[in-house]
Length: 350
Image (cartoon, rainbow, N blue to C red; front, side, top):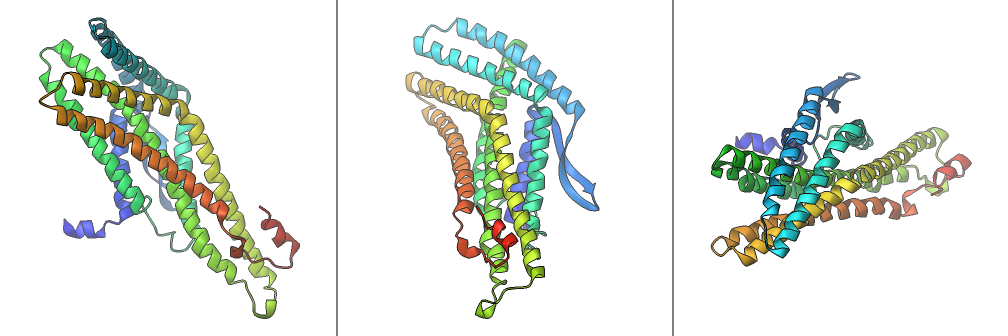
């Protein structure tokens, strides 16, 4: 066992966590596709593909559970007398319902867009690693920063499982069991939307970080290799080869930016709803901790801390993606060798 752990790299462990999270999301009916290894041009690569039985499972499960959740939760709301508690529960009911509808709409109308976006992410990781010789053999996802954030996210998901699923065993009859089951699935589905957005922003940050590392080290070394003593000009063959590398760098950077814009366009509304669900649950749990709970107050505040942690690591992932995207723009022109050839000058125009 310890030998296996020694052979696991940071990026490999991060990729394993992501695969397990994807399986959990498929079980909850969030993602109707599978990510598996396929043979492409003689290479074994990871690709996302349609899974039609999973699509029908996700839609039927989401429709059935959301409908029953609306019926049972509304009956609970009708008997609540407290003003603040009623307001928070109505808010949570409305947002959870909107989030469930949003997931269904995304699966029906934007399923193929999400599939293409995921494959673009996977292709980009291969392209970025293919820029340098040492990156071609690299597998997995990200580095130490990504692993730490994923481990924190794993703790949050595990905390959800520990808190939510045991409530099923305390149900006294079938009606209560079904009501609790629907509430758990709808709530966890809304939370999984936030987890998915977190992974997306973390992936963008990892892509920009790997690309920035290549530009700062490998590309800078290759450009400085063009310098000749006494300001002599390198031959055209070397300039042409370097020009191809720069063209590929520009294309990769443009593709990362394009994927980031497409990702933001698709997840804006689901992310806002998921964050609102998180805040509504935080307000409801805090209200119960202050007003009613005396013996288990530490447990309830742990739930509040977990909800806050979800927001915090999402913010860190977004900040990391934005910061990494700006670093490449601030790279100094000292990286670039400027020759006397006009076609080379055009590549240096920002």
